[in-house]
Amino acid sequence: MTEEEHTGRVRVTSPLTTAPAHVRRSVRQEIDESTGIGEVYMRSLIRAQLRAALTVAATLALSIGTLPLLFLAFDSVTEMHVLGVPVPWLILGVLVYPGLFALGWVYIRQVERAERDFTELVEPQRPDSS
Amino acid sequence: MNATYGVVAVTLVAIATLGIGAFGLRMSRTTSDFYVASRSVSPVWNSSAIGGEYLSAASFLGVAGLVLTHGADMLWYPIGWTTGYLLLLVFVAAPLRRSGAYTIPDFAQVRLQSMGVRTVASGLVVAVGWLYLMPQFQGAGLTLRTVTGAPNWVGTVVVAVIVVVNVVSGGMRSITFVQAFQYWLKLTALLIPVFFLLHAWSGDGRPTPVAPEEWFQPFSQADGPGLYLTYSVMVATFLGTMGLPHVVVRFYTNPDGHAARRTTLIVLALLGTFYLLPTIYGVLGRVYARDLLDTGRADTVVLELPSRVIGGSTGELLAALLTAGAFAAFLSTSSGLTMSVAGVVGQGLARGRISTITALRIAAAACVVVPLLLALSAERIAVASSVTFAFALAASTFCPLLVLGIWWRGLTARGAIAGLVGGGLSAGVAAILTIAVRPDGWFGVVMSQPAAWSVPIGFALMIGVSLATRSDVPANVSRTMVRLHTPERLDVDRRF
Image (cartoon, rainbow over all chains, first blue to last red; front, side, top):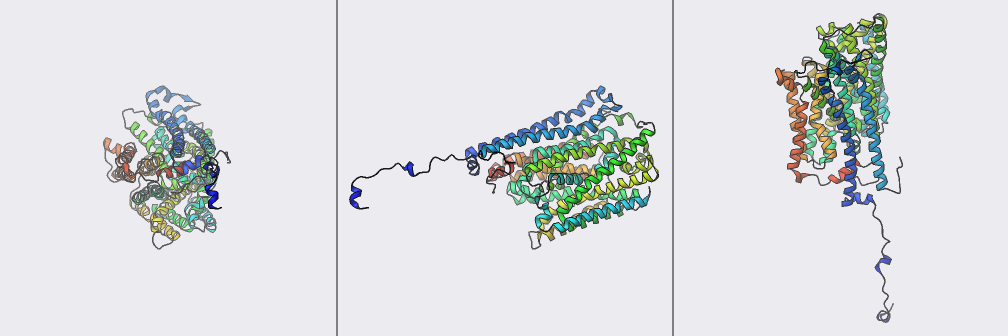
């Protein structure tokens, strides 16, 4: 290239042709770099999980938690018999346990689904592999 | 009761425990094997191990004894011990596993970046462990005396020695095998005699339990302290489970958070199945063994029933089976507790020149000595009540630490220390007062079940002081939250 050519025609190019094509930043990058968007995604995941946990806690408080008051308030309940067994013994000794398991099972389904959704959001090209 | 059968049963359990422990020893070589079984334990093994570890003397003997003595109101204890796992599942299980730490003090340090919190938490782990170990050792003494007539200290020392040998030789991996074996042993030991007992009871024309009216009805005296005590027991057991050191350390042995959740769900099923049984023993005790109430030996009702109801060599064999189960209960709970307390103390020691495995071994031996001396010197308190103080202490300290640490970004190191110390002192002073002084009246009632007020104190201090020291929130809290809450299969940055 010589000086003369420079004084002649100058080729003007758009900087965009050498710049990489527009890259969409992945949610994963947003999270890794703790950007505002990444934070929003994380907070929504945590909030969903906490909501599921609080739902279970509230269910417990309203069911098992109110049983003592129920027994105290309604004598008719404590004096009922089913198959010769007093109802409070049946509830406290037997029925509570399958109830606890069922609650745990429902909870796990819920949070695992929330985590799957989150995974798809963050890595759409790799939908749930587990 | 025939002493020979009992001695044979105890010996077999001891040999099986040490044998399975030795099997684990051949496989455990690295530090990670020792502390958390290299995190490769499957949910079924792990949940059996948790069940085996968790069902202590209080569950195997204590619940039946309480039901025999106090009736319907006592059914809250096993309910609380199971519900505690459900709350552990929803608030703690997966994030705790994902935190990647070995123990609660590790978690505290990872989350809050503070050695101070770590030290306080370590001290509390030791305190909870001792409170829980002492009644196990005492229960072992009582069982061996019931079965063989040997003095109390024999059973206490035998259990302590087996536990130390077991932990020192194999660490967590062998403990996992031992614990899983012991869950199934305990369930079988309690289940098989139930069939014989119910059959004999039917043969007798199904006599109804002989008891005063209030035994049958929960809260027959509305003006008494029943309601406060019931709710306080609920708070302690619901929230204390997640803070028990030997329970928490099990979650680190899961491969990932998903497995931690599945493990907990299986545990709920295993515990629910087990807790159907002690009630039957308590009720049958009202039919066949009311004299135990007068002699203050209600805790032995499970062991006494077969020889009384069935008799003959069948009765003796069943009694031996139950003795084996009871001994499994002492061994597994004590091993797990010793392991977890030793893990915490050992990590502290290992900062010096000692290797981590040597440190763990020294710590295990040292951690057993104090509760052993307490068990030998202190007069016997009911197994379940001493265990309740361990739950109350854990609920007032570690429950706020874990729940707030996992779900609230605003927790600070100073806030955590304030809550741990305040909640710990509240529950600790109540325990000491009740055991040493036994105050009367409403004050005695409030002190005997402190959780209803000590847990709110722990939470309030932790939240209040954290808000006051808001500028201290660790700078990397966002990164920690990513680590605690994102599924492992996501390839995000989890570094601190």
